[in-house]
Length: 487
Image 1 (cartoon, rainbow, N blue to C red):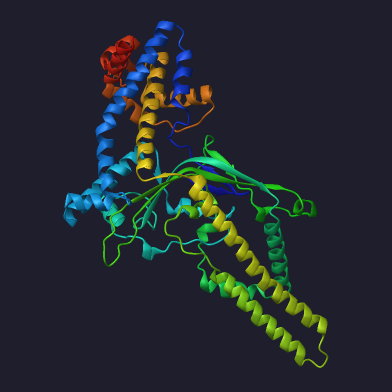
Image 2: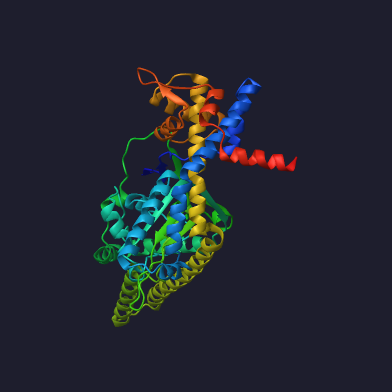
């Protein structure tokens, strides 16, 4: 996925390969497009046999994945490792095998490793979380993932890939409607404070001091320029900071908007202690995480506090205020109103900094609680089972759509088949995706129900012949045996 920050705070998101259609709806919709009832029945039978066969293909691989994870489950894994009586070297090999299986399943389920660029663009704005959140590196293991990526190089790995990995898939939109009284007051005070600094010519001093503490990335404020695709998704960020706060807006509800990562999976290991090495691997699964607030899924977060910039503003304001007050007192005719204005401004800013921090801390606690109860789908074994089933569902949908196109349209090149599958999804279901035609064709060839002519075009066998080639599956035999017993 590419992301582009454009004017008016719009993020461009490249289409993903995941097919966002429920399998039963997909199958019934395609079946209803078939004219003859006999062909329709054969098509439904073929869909079942395709799913049963693909599920059988992955069964052994998934079984190995689950068996390996049982050794590294943070809850019971340590006890099972002791029972196995394995050497540290053997455990190292097993945990690397687990990560290999895990990343294969992630790739098949169309999850991508989040890059530094994507995280920078996602966090370039603020949504509901207004505190700087960072990870306590001392509490995270730095050997497990570093060893894996050294042996299995990947492109565009983020800087933190030695400590944890963030996988993401799917894009959504989150909207929040509220009065945001405190946030509006905070923005007004910030704007008034900016005007005061500009009038007193202190803005340049603060900018100079803060630049010493914060190195500004010139790329962060520039647009990420890339070729635009008309089929890409464009999502606008609607934030309080960019709104015109009129008197009417101050007293009424407003709606803010932020694109979300539909699914996020975080993988990490805690740091070992001096007494006992840590072997547990955490796999946590979240849903609908706003891009600007994705820090809430980070592992082992530090307790947030005032930023260096806040301390600079706070201290510089206090020093400047005191200097101005003493300067006014030394004058022959001290103006009490000027002294009062200066003291009030300094006290007001300090109070604003304190109360804003307290408000942001309360919002942070609420977001963390929500992420634990509402946005965390599962963890550990539950996440892996979900991924395994998700792989099967995606593979089945890709195969069914590809076969249906070849069945209805006849021969097609790989490029034509890719385009026609995407058009079918768009026309019949109103959804857009980057169809993974290579994977679908490989599965169809493995099933033996498509072939290529002399010039490389693909064509499929008839429905009845396709069912004969796949043959009766074990699941069908079990169903027949059940029906026989019941009758």
